[in-house]
Image 1 (cartoon, rainbow, N blue to C red):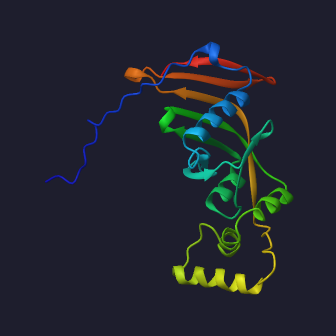
Image 2 (image 1 turned 30 degrees about the vertical axis):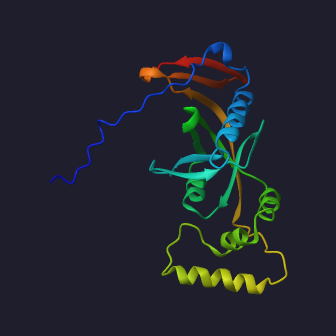
Amino acid sequence: MSNTSDISALRREYVAAGLHRRDMLADPLAQFRGWMDAALEAHPDDATSMTLATADAQGWPAARIVLLKRFDTEGFCWFTDFRSDKGQQLAQNPKAELMFYWRGLERQVRIRGRVEQLPYRDGETYFHLRPRGSQLSAAASDQSQAIDHRVTLEQRVQDLDQAHAGEEIPCPETWGGYRLIPHQIEFWQGRENRLHDRFRYTLVDGDWQLERLQP
């Protein structure tokens, strides 16, 4: 018996209504906000999950799921450990892409742009909004680094909790936020027979230009 799993015959059909140019707002952020609101209503637990794709100085790509924590006219923000793989890659190559996929709505959004660190106070403010357990985990973990055993990590968390019993957990200087400043945003709507609708906004000389892409 072959160990190869052939999944080429798997199919799913997309049945959502179409996406027309007249539906697309002039401002892609406003367009994104409308789609995000619909996703939050349909699947609130997963709506803010996004794939963050980065690449290091040698061009090796890496992707992982992170959570969008805010977005506005300045960009799309998330929080993490600066020492993590993604933090190191962004230090070497401060360009990235975000991707949202909302299966129930048959929609996808890709956002590409330059990335910058948020001010420390932004990270500190958000850090202290998190549950204490999440604060302890973030402060005790040297994210992405090898460790001998989970027990070691759990002991670090316990020691840190005891050291700050009855006190606020200090936000590490190695933990905080990033902002992706978009220069390209693509909206994808699944359609029947894979004839999907795709519209891409590109920032040119300060203005957003919109074009339809072939599927």
